[in-house]
Amino acid sequence: MFISKSGRHNLPSLVALTVATLLAAGCGSSTTSINSNSQTVTGSAFVVGTDAPMASVVSFSVQVGIAATDENGNTVQLVSGSPTVDFARFNGLQTLIDMNDVPVGTYAKVAITLSNGTIGYLDTSTAEPTIKTMPANLTNATVSYTLANPMVVAQAGAPVGLHMDFNLRKSIVVSNGQITGDVIPTFAVNGVNNNDKGAYIDEFDAAVVSTDAGKQTLTVQGPHGRQFTVNVTGQTEWDGGAMFSDLTSSSIVQISGSLDRADATIDADEIAILSDSGFYAAGQVTYVNPSSGPATSFDLYVRGLLPTTTGLTLGQIATIDLSGSEKYSIYWMHGPFAQFLFNQSGLLPGQHIAVGGPASGATDPTKVTVKRVVLRHWGFNGTVVPGSVNTGNNTFQMTVNGFAGLLIPQTVTVYIPDNCEYRDGLTQLSDVSSATNVRVVGLLLKNPTNGNTVLVGHYVDDLN
Image 1: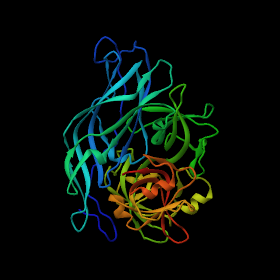
Image 2: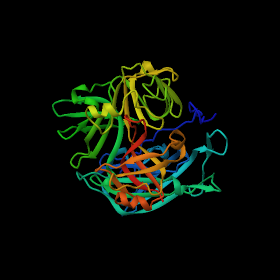
Image 3: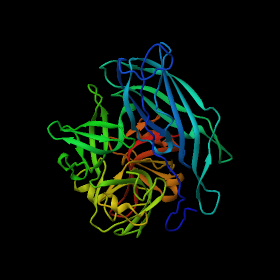
Image 4: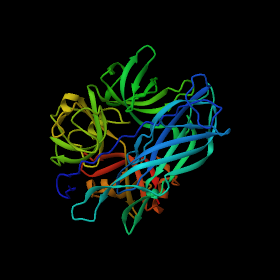
């Protein structure tokens, strides 16, 4: 099975497992391994995950165990069992993995154990590039870290957490341009407070369980069954003209925000209704039919899915049929201008989108019907075109690499808005002139006036 360089892109049935819940739990004080005990004094702790990507890697699924040790030598298991995590799907965005109570104390040491890993990668050695998998040979199954900023868990204190950044580029061994299968696990692990940048929730997809209009709160259930309370305020922005009263128990939403200092709930900055009918799927567009004008269908490489009991599976290509009655919106963009930029004629291969509709419309992956199409941020790895940085126009050009590069072979103009953030050593647009490899997390759009592909940056990261 292959990715055709002309026309529709075909991928094998690759299993891309969802990020498993990282559960911080346990208590007790007299033994080195702390067991659950309801009488132990606890405080709130959370785990936020992201990655530093490797362009050719489509997935890196591995079973994960995490243990934290306090100043008295007591150890808390931060995951329940050995969940499977696909680190390749974070792609520059931070997501809340879980939040629970742990025994009060100062946790300065963390041990991460990996097992049963599988690498999904893009093989470009043949005429038609293919997606292949291989078992991961973990050269060091357990890696230990001392936190520069320990997790200080206090009773009734503000939530504290663990920020884990798995560096795929430094972890997966390459020899003569080929992935060998050897993995040297390399993490950046830090203790963070709820108001740190490393604790911000860029995106969190969840199903609505209930709403309270009086308190302006909603209870949501994440992909792994954990329920969270989300607070809506006058500063919360809604995408696609939605409002609180539109939420029902059939809604699936995307949320961005921070953890509340007082009660460990989520304070929402942004909410999008991905589905109002109980089903959603998210991933990258691989093919649009026709390539110009209003699309009648497109293919979606499925990376996210709720529920998992329809005809769709993670890692497959689903064909989305369009009738013209679907509602289009852009995450973090509001008003009629969003409709002008993204609509049935604005679909592009490489875009990261979510679709939503009734589960009955997703029984056959070859002809999925939906009601909503939402354009979302995604991380695009690429090479800066020399001499293309224009600080007067706040733009530069890049060629996209890896899997997304096959979908976006053309040079892309990157537009930098005033609120764009620079990371990993970059501080301003002029710094990009000296960077070779960058990742731009943002919105991929078709310029409605000339059809050119543009990328509106939200984050710009130095990958050198």
